[in-house]
Image 1 (cartoon, rainbow, N blue to C red):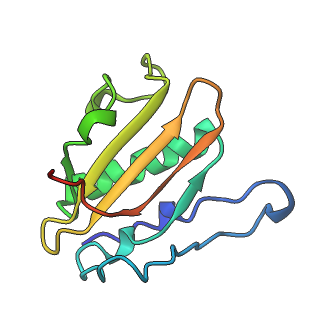
Image 2: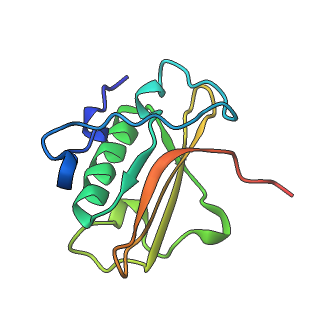
Length: 130
């Protein structure tokens, strides 16, 4: 079980020099387990640099086995998460879904890349199967 401190992305602008530790309002989500509790943060993404810090953190969690990638459904992009990098061609909008193999909590990484308007990482409800 990793300690994914890179999710505490260095703040920019007026908050420069401070670390953000933003928790999402998880009242309507299940409680995360010990395995994925370090991924249980809402992280806004405002710049390409922040996006790729989150991508690196998610890759480490995947490598550690603390989360696994799942189908993103009809909104998924063309570029596989394994191939997503700063130097590769990117979809205009990226959407990747993950879940904890122990408790089943779902997480989503989504961002608009074509104009840099941002995105986020955080908990999400499972996709509807209907």
